[in-house]
Length: 301
Image 1 (cartoon, rainbow, N blue to C red):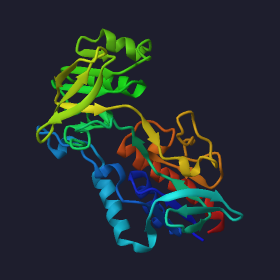
Image 2 (image 1 turned 90 degrees about the vertical axis):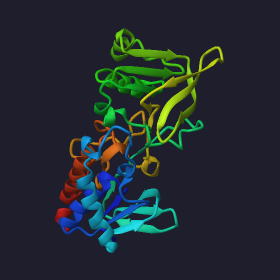
Image 3 (image 1 turned 45 degrees about the horizontal axis):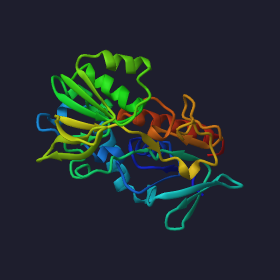
Image 4 (image 1 turned 180 degrees about the horizontal axis):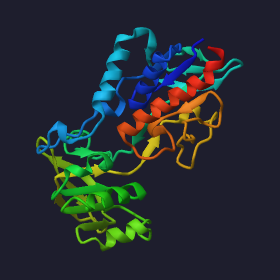
């Protein structure tokens, strides 16, 4: 039986695993890959890597340590986590059953995709899913934000403080009566295309435009320096949904120490109800979750 199993190999999971190793906890990290969302970096023709704060140095350091420590990692997806008499059982995709005294869930979230021609081809080459991460790069640029809800409006509002023009493509949006919605309506550099939908992303080496269909069925092409798909983030919490408390959007609810409502289960990063989808925040939450797990385990270590 392990003292701790960390599920997920992104920034939060890597940090949690390394902190646990340094506390001499018998820990295993179980994940389909190492690095999570840091494996995807937005490329734009006018920027250099140094202009983006990604936390990659920290994440890559932890990743290198886990790649070296074979005994501390198991590369396989997790399907389910169950309660057992002495702790928890982590069920892996291949049928494995791993016993542990405590668990940290750091499985992140996945973005809803448009599923239109060109989206896959230009992913992270002028098209991405996080304006929050890259907005500062768009001074005096033109951007397109695609989405129907609060996430899209928040992203458009942030870009509007920096970019020259922001086009918000919203097939059906009921959020414009909110404070941010009213701000977008009044902003001179924001063009709200309500009732429109993106049917194709076009470009060369990078995404350069989107093909739109208006409410009447007519098509037009809209040029842009970047396209942000901001439809929704879906937390990967399904493997533990029947054990811990979730919010209305299926994020795992945690306290300020990354504890769930179940003793011995912790969560960190984008799978939680925490603030902002950012690598550095996930790193910090991974550290907090590991220290909380250590405190839980310490009396019996």
